[in-house]
Length: 308
Image (cartoon, rainbow, N blue to C red; front, side):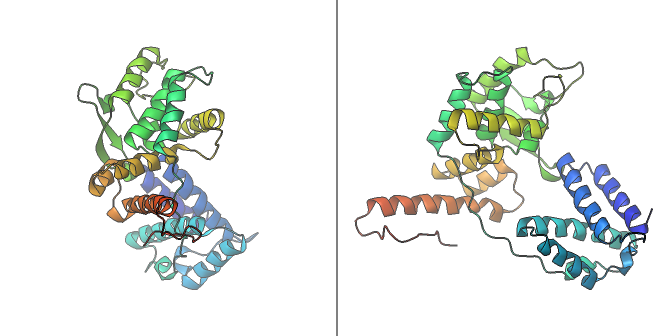
């Protein structure tokens, strides 16, 4: 095994010890082994980590552009490489982090598409009414109530355990990115859905997960995504709706009804307020659309964009 391969294995072991999420481990492992493959010509070992300078890393970055990867994917891969070299610098394998000298590609600013409150509630009401035949409709309703009612990431939802709930006070302990914990309240609709689901929860002995699959084991985040997609397609006829759409809807609808931006930041578990502020762009876009439709002096034909 080459020195670079051993370095990658040491770094991934460190992430496991730090309780990095399965999603993070899967992505970082994939990105780092693709990086290893690029620098492993047939019949030869890759360079040692200390020999990989900024010129070599820029060449690798150019290969990603040549493959047609978008800026978001390239930024993620570069972040994985920077994190690897930061680890190697700290352990003394590399004298400096050459990846910091590589410029991060600019990502396009995208305002996420968010279903309206009417669309979201219509979808969840249809789930509650059993409009789609399924083996576990009570569990499926809990998924929707917690994604929209609490603004959870799908990985956070899948990671919930029964002992994370304070059923009397209606609070959930949520483990977010980097295993950072936060407390999130949940409402009466979610409480009612959970109350109906728990007696029907067919879990294996000692299984702590709130949501379980047909085998009685923890429902994966991929499984939860598939369930949301199924209902979105069957009920709303819109396969573009996914779990993060409900998280976006949670934040956007709270903001539209006057919730404080910092409170929304805490509920979403964002480390930086700037991440939460993208939802103000959505609200401005909605305001401009109303103005353009209703005001007699509005330029209805002009393409409007919210101020940055």
